[in-house]
Length: 436
Ligand code: F0G
Image (cartoon, rainbow, N blue to C red; front, side, top):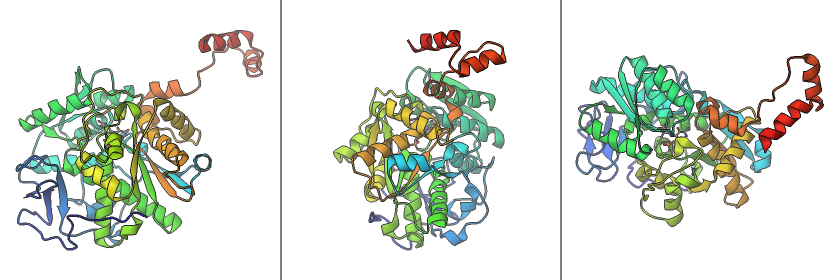
């Protein structure tokens, strides 16, 4: 088990004068404290470092009640938010996959079952609440697709205008359709996600809109509840916490959020430092700056300018939350691994074979676990939870490419029977033609 060290965390934090109702923002670089809601700020005004939401008290499991994200209000800055509602996603058992990967226990936390089909909803229910608190009327994000779908839906729910910047030609069809129908203004940028985020940061710094990318520390508060649900449910079933959580990494927001979740539970006394799950990140080979940093032991991540992968959700070369996430991977004794597009598609098919329909980025977690198991980094005795972050229908084209082709048949029962018996010469020729 990993020993969790808590570098900057006294047991009973001194509440700074900047706090409002026991909540404040702390810079992870210079340690400066800021009031949480007096102004719109995404990074530290002193040094531009990333901000983290801090609390005067730390949660314990017995304080949680109700369901969904807001069950965990004791660990969040508010008691309620703009909700659809979100959270309470299944922690599937996948027995065939568990056996073929070869671990003691494999569970799949399917975040694709959230209202807009991805984990982003957990961040948005909190983030849009904060937007109301600070009094803005326009929300904005850069996105590989899912953030834009969630922002559009939660913005619509909250009665706020939304603006989303997407990398042209690189966003899956389901996600654009969602953003569009929920009424977001969609700007397609001739660049990749990282370029879109650079522009949105400038727009929001100039006061044009409120930024709801995972750079916004409040989004990560909502996403912490993925970890709380996993730990609660796994413990209820198995009487222990999982050894490892494997997740796809793009901007590394979830990695950062899970690490924060564990640290707060350790401070609250409900999670022993030795029981903290090992955070294990997976990236696509064509977009793997975090893996590069973990493997080289570097302090920070070098931006990749050219990125490509079938998993368009994690086609990201500059993971903005790396300074929060890298310590999480290291301190929990986890690791990071890169997988090929082929491995991702194979894992997507394997999950589908268990009835769990996910988009390619989500399948990266299972592909990464398989790879780490084969190389012996993951032990056969481990209890593992893989996070699948988005629903199959987000990317219908990738799903259709990974799945079987429809078979055209003539309009008659006899012909259908002949086809099923393999005696339909016309249909057979058609299938052969499609193969070659
Ligand atoms: N999986 C899916 C399906 C995603 O949409 C994303 C991120 C990730 C994983 C990576 O999560 O950033 O917390 O490491 N999608 C963002 C978006 C970038 O714009 O929808 P992370």
